[in-house]
Amino acid sequence: MPEDTMWSNIFKHTQKKERSTLSVLKKVPIFVDLNSRELRAMERILHRRTYNDGEIIFNENEPGAGMYIIESGKVFIKVGKAEKVLAVLSNGDFFGEMALLLESPRTASAVARGPLKMLGFFQPDLFHLMETNPKTGNKILRRLAQMIAERLRQTTLENSELKNQISKYEANSDE
Image 1: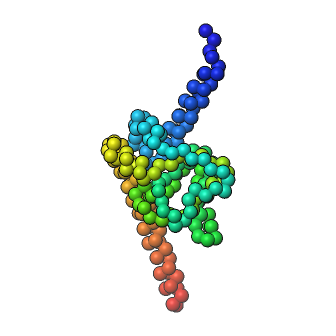
Image 2: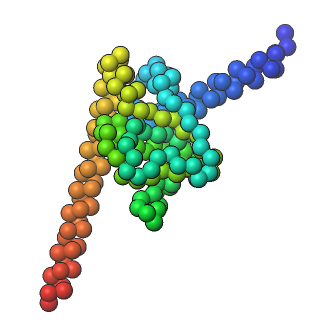
């Protein structure tokens, strides 16, 4: 019996989209401990967003609501009135994860660079997940805590190195 091309293409397109999203999620550090069932459940609660070139995702000093995962495209992370570019993020990268835990102002702005497709994971989603599926929520929280702790460790080391450089500079200036 010949294959119905129209139906097979629709089915393949759906499978490809699901595999694509799942493959992106598997690479995000806070989701690496999740099994296939948990990843599919995460996929259902994530919010899809699309942006055009130059669209603002969020501004510096705005309240944070959650994190974003880039499916395709690029994002510029900028700070200050001069909008100095701190980072250029692309497929599979994520940002804004501290807003999952803190309701504090954003420390930078995020702007789409070209067409952009992203997934949003917001604080209410995490809190609901922790209530309805504590095991999955705890896996995510544990990884999030480890990631933030590692960043804090790196920042502490960088600050220590900068202090050493300043001390050496000041000692040389006094001579």
